[in-house]
Every structure is written in C-alpha cells, then in structure tokens.
Image (cartoon, rainbow, N blue to C red):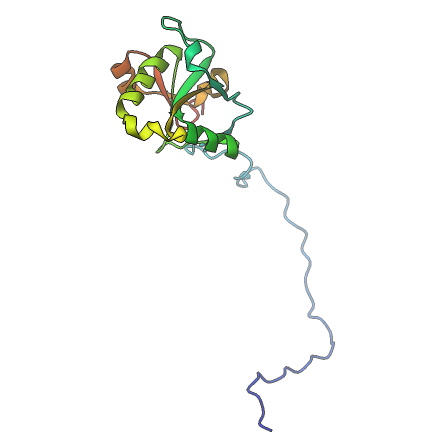
Length: 173
C-alpha cells in the first residue's frame, strides 16, 4: 500500500535545561510617561447614539382627535408616521436614527399641518384597503432627548412651527 502524503512526523524534544532568563524588575512609572489613552474620551470625537429604547423615552400613540387647534407646546415631541412603521418600532423596542437619517419631531402645534400634508401626498386608493398605510402620531418625552435634537429650519419655515431632527449627536460634548 502506498504511503499517504502527510507531513513528516516531528521529533519530540527531550526535556533539557531551559535557557537562562534575566528577570528585571518592571520600571516604575514616571511623571513623563504617556497617560492611559483609554481612560479618557478622545478629544474631537463625538459620541453618536443610533437608537433609543421606547420605554425610556415614553413612546405612546396619540389619538389625533384629541389634538385641538390652538394648543401650545407641551412636554412632548410628536412624530407622524404610518401604522406599519409604528408597529415595526414597537416590535423592535427601539427608535433607530442617525445623522444621515434623522427622526423628524415637532411640537404639538406642528402635528395638524404635518398630518394634513401627509394626507395630501397619500392617494385615496392606496389608503382604501391598506390599514398599514394609515397615518398615526406618536409622542416621546422631550426632556429625555432634548440634548440630541437639532433645529430643522426648512420644515420650521414651511409649517411655521418648530421642527427638530433627532440625529443622535450630543450638543453638550
């Protein structure tokens, strides 16, 4: 029978004397040593959040019929979306956003014009048989994410009400 092409077996080494090692005591750190780079945050690098837990931000669905015209801003920020998107957010348990794809939020007076604009854009045939495409409104606690918001001047100018972008960039840093 032919020999299989395996690697040649290695010879075992006989235990012998280990080479002599010199043991030097570790050098004591001096004041001129470099500081620990992982102990402090890096300057110039900003911490970016990419999601928020819906329980922590107090996400709750809002009945649009209870929003009254003329009411001022309150302690919440509002977002208009579709039923399917809200169900996805609730199933995931988080709101996902980024500086490139921020979540748009507004104060209470901004909900009716935003909702009206969304209803104009949607075609009546699309909504007739699709519950998932029905616009819904949810709110979140403003004080939890106030430092992560940036003003949205385009929507603010268009609707005449303050709009914000949830980008995840902390303004305090």
